[in-house]
Image 1 (cartoon, rainbow, N blue to C red):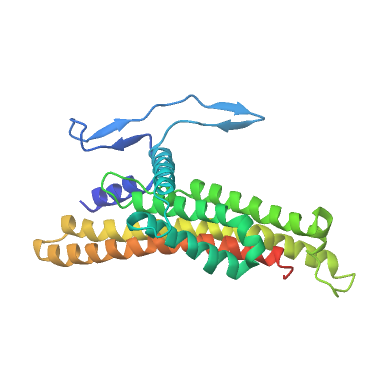
Image 2: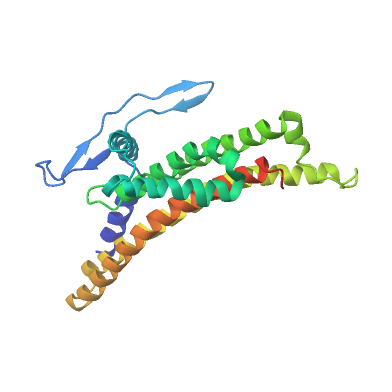
Length: 270
């Protein structure tokens, strides 16, 4: 039984070519997703098959487009309801995240990207908490792609501010002895790549850990006696509510750190 619980936890975390849907009539409620043959480009095998994490990302993008169209139609001097909530998030990202880390001028340029990142990660996180859903951000490939986009945005912001040669020149702090400059350049260059790596692993690890804890607590019901049921379910509900907070928190942290890394370059500080 313990092995079956472990397989159940892995099944809900890892990616796969099928999805569980409530309206499918077979006993497993499973539908197999379309398979696209892989192809090779410059020795790299590229597999474009549809997986459940891809489906959840497409669903998140579709929901965000609908949200944007709805909010755009409901724009008013005094927004209400859902529009007011969305506006509150956007203003928070613009004023308390972007302006606080990079100044008002740069905030106007980079707030659209930061808002897109925040809402996309938040939507993916929340979709993973819905029954029959899957958390795309618990896939390291997804978080790596998000971190890679932030990496290009960060480096692009630095080069836009300082120029290409000025950007690479800032990797050697002023006043460093000439014999130490090559070492400092390598150390600073490693830091450039360490930032997106930290963004990737932090989001991936936190989303995986939350789902593992929730599913483990529920799994206790099947491996122990009936007296564990109230405790396991109670802690499971508590962790589920906590995971709602974590979903919001991780979207904020990813966005805030991206804004901070951009701000370190565009405000002329290092």
